[in-house]
Image 1 (cartoon, rainbow, N blue to C red):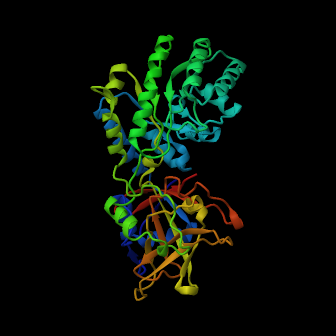
Image 2: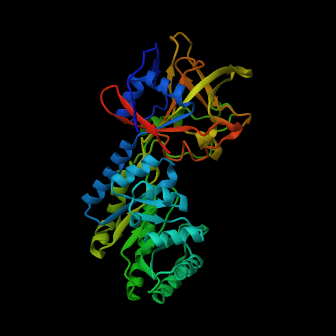
Length: 464
């Protein structure tokens, strides 16, 4: 059952927002951080550091915004939340409450989605390495299976034939767009055509529903081009007396962590080797200051030309095709914050300073991918001001020299002290739990689901 906590005795704490890469914050989360920092301190004392706070209301807001765009354009649509973005069960529940489906990549994600209340027919499995048990469960539940290869199609056929009761597998065929010929995912044009022909011979086993593709990056035009390529196979399938009714364009909708102007200014003026303790500027970053939001991206995709005089939206409507999406990160925009407690600040040689926190880079994973999380943390100071401004990089509590949460030298308006908190905003998308583990036998970070009840009172419950 949720626990309700009102603000405890107010210690003299201060909240210091970053000046350089200031995170965009949901209004409810911002109010909580800035008006009830003592509650945060109490929760970290009770549940440990790092502590992940999940806010399902933000998921609902994001889902409704995408649904509104699709309804505005009048296209049939299906949204599948990419559950791999976060392990939170409450976010799966938020997806079920929003009436959207879930993209599951393992039998374990399938089980979790069903526990959250998602109808099995709203589940879609797009991963390329599905096991026999996973295939069997998907077919048994009547979920949608995205077939990655001719080999998977034959494997799925054998699974269906092994089941005791007559049943059909619902399938999409995954296409490998011309722009990524070296990808190991999906089928090229020739293999896709052969699989369509195979499906014409297996109508008693498969219910063919359409096509799927997925691309890396965040450019809507690459999706539009792949969509145009794939729509030719819609005509081919219909000529074979198949009835495709869906094109799934995968995920990769962008989200905005900080204001675009601040991000552009940082990249131009404050992103030199001297701004990193290891003197190395990463080669690539997520576009934290994206000039497009997820909704703007979706609008531009739907408005993109499909053929002369016809937009993609018009094509979908005229052909009676459902557009499917698999957003992950963009659906969990603003849905979590991660709180680290400072253990000490240490002066190193050559005027370097490192801040050690309770927690590791396994719970803030960008440095493991040779990149950086270009969102500065909010500091909750538990001691009176008076310490000088400084800059430091941030390290975890393990014995690994590579356990670095940020190599970048973060500017602080006052020196963090033991017991202070560093709050990383917007960590729900692949940040807070992608690599978490129990190294040094530290327990896994706790995850709490938080809702705002009345002014100054917040309900929380464990999020398993």
